[in-house]
Amino acid sequence: MKVAILGTVSLHRHLAPFNDADWEIWCCSPGNHGNGADGKPLIPRVTNWFELHGTVDMLAPEVANWTGPYFKWLREQSFPVWMQEPNDSVPGALIFPRDAILERFSSPTRRAWFFTSSVTWMMAHALMMGAKEIGLFGIDMAANEEHYS
Image (cartoon, rainbow, N blue to C red; front, side):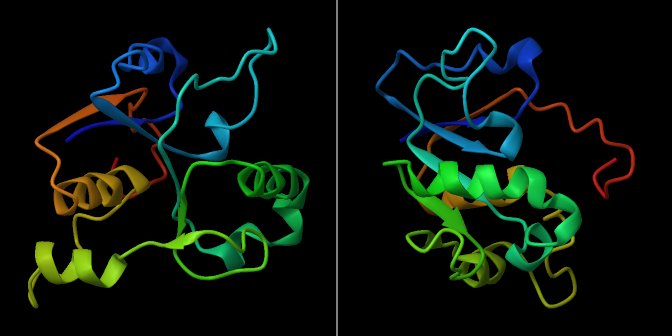
């Protein structure tokens, strides 16, 4: 199994192997949903979507202007959507196996210290699913207010 994990950086996100059926295309982030300026989908092929932020945080009034359309879009998709917990915003979402990943990839002294972004969770999930090759596209981790910086 080969997994391409996509972030939102347009400079190199488009280099993912969309036309190679040997690759699964895993996406995350509201920044990847919907259509581009030309009306074409931002991501031409998706096999799994990951929204790993806490649902309670995404339902806060100050972000409702973008989470409402984003959750509506997620509900309309035919590919699997993975989330942290069951919720009414995307009732068909699969529950992300957080505890199984923690059990496999951490220890009592270093529990989850390296899981600082959706991408790291997605990489661990890909390994648990048997990925032999993982490609990262559109990821620069440049937000300086985040733990990974």
